[in-house]
Image 1 (cartoon, helix red, strand yellow):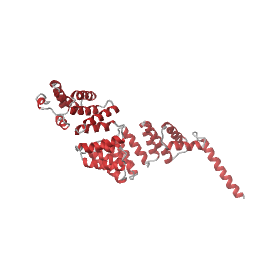
Image 2 (cartoon, rainbow, N blue to C red):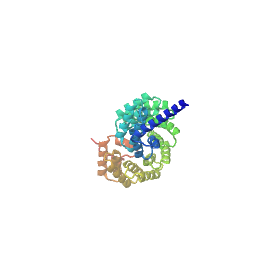
Image 3 (cartoon, rainbow, N blue to C red):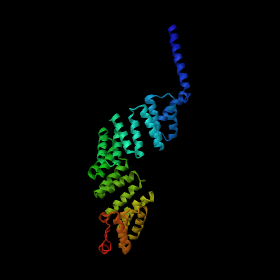
Image 4 (cartoon, one colour):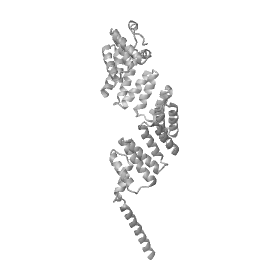
Length: 365
């Protein structure tokens, strides 16, 4: 009986000591507040300020140590990044790493923050550390591939995307990103194959359709390009670029110029000041024989970008076709000064100087 009393007394004493220690911590007076803050700190939601405040109370409470403390800094870093404060995010990720040097996710997320700041070398270093700590996580491979691609090292980018796919064969974004890299290297068949796989894995994402459409367009397979742009528009009808791309390819194909015109008009409704779309619509008007309208659109495209050699050359040809030899020649000479091979490029778009105007348009020296 006496032993039982001693056990109860000891348990009571321990509980009392725990309460005293808890009460001494400045940030909390109630267990419920503590656990509510932990839940809020752990889950990024729409109120990032509330999350930051909750994480800060957790950090300052004195109740978190070791990896648990690192998690609170990590979560607050995520909230700072969501708020757009990359410097504070990096500070918190760095503190999480200091507390727990084996925290792979902290390295990975710090790498993302460095990349957003344009510090690609630091981003690559952090992704590499994350990979070393957790080689079975596909995300750091994919993100390091994006960084390599931004630095112009397509071979390393492709190697990392391939490794991400090896780790996670269902990683749609890795296929998508590798497709972009293959296209930049000029390997359009591989680009199409990777975008096709990305579409199979995530058929509701418009981006692989658009990029596969670009690859088909580069191969002059206009029918498949238009089909892909059409699907991209169906999935994301608010993206002006998809309408502009379909407008351009329809103009090149020449089968549905009225449809092309409608696409460019919709693109400009969504994004009124886009010089690329004015250039595209200029091509449509040119191919319709509406040279005044074409010139007006090229005027606007050039006003958006004075170094737009394509618009300058096309406007020059349109002026020649209207009998304005002086204006046409001036535009063509200016275009060739910017891009010496612009005549050959424009010929692919159906914009050529006819025999009557050829002699009036001297080569740029």
